[in-house]
Length: 406
Image: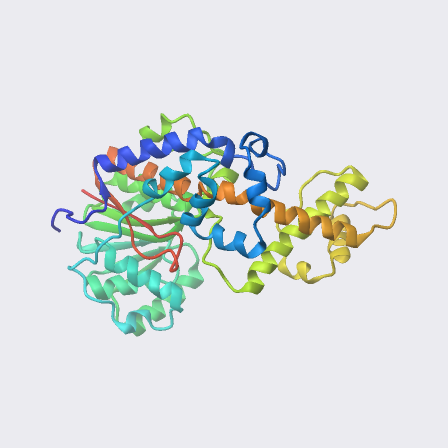
């Protein structure tokens, strides 16, 4: 492949952006570290004069619209948080151009793949450096949708590594039908001998491999001598310890400890779904908060209510709370005014939504900081490393593509 001429981030730009984001996140930590659900009255409500009135003036539809629009968030919050003005530039990442060495994906490679997932695969494949090496390795490949696409468009054989045997069986059948040079190997990527798959003539690809899974790949590529990788990370908190451990020396030098819950902040963004789905998510929050308030006041029980099965949220509020009480062997000393506690839950949920507008201002800066930590690690291992986006946010919010090669 030729040297990169596209305006994607590379070399010193990665280091400069990482340093600037580190300063922003450290300076503004009191605004994004506290979780609103656990702290309904954060200190900044008192210290940032006027921000509470501005948030309370927003209607439900405004909150949803602003929460999904970084520009609108900045316009709302810059009068109270001057650093907000820096965020659009700090989060600006150029888009990867299409790789001219790759053919357009053939229809047979993507037959049966649903719409948005198909768009993600096509965009990733066309942006990738898949023609860097003679062989490709699809890391945590699932059914091998990406592998089939790259086998056809790059004209390379692809080995899929996947832990679930069922997915491997399905993927083999789909590869045969697509006439793609794809093989599957059932493998737990945490096994020590997986390093042998990353030979110098292998380029690894991973589309939305979760937390510890893609960290494992990064470390192996760095140590094994593999040709390089193309990685779109996702779910940074999964398969990870309770406290974030930076990969790069630059990351380790930043005094910014992160809990798993804080790392999850950058994932609290999704493409806006149907109105009923948005309402269901808010109802789940309202009912958990209402149940917590009831148990705290009437039973002096302060353990939070975690994620619950969706079918429970279709129960009447009183029945929902009774299932929580039964699980915890709790009995109310008197009959409860369910309407009162449900109303309080909705009020608190709407209050939390407003507080989250401030916290969510730092979602993308934190995600970019995490990905740059990975990019700088690869640089430190001697790989040429670049970062760009491979698709629009409407296709997937997890649209950062990190590529590196020797």
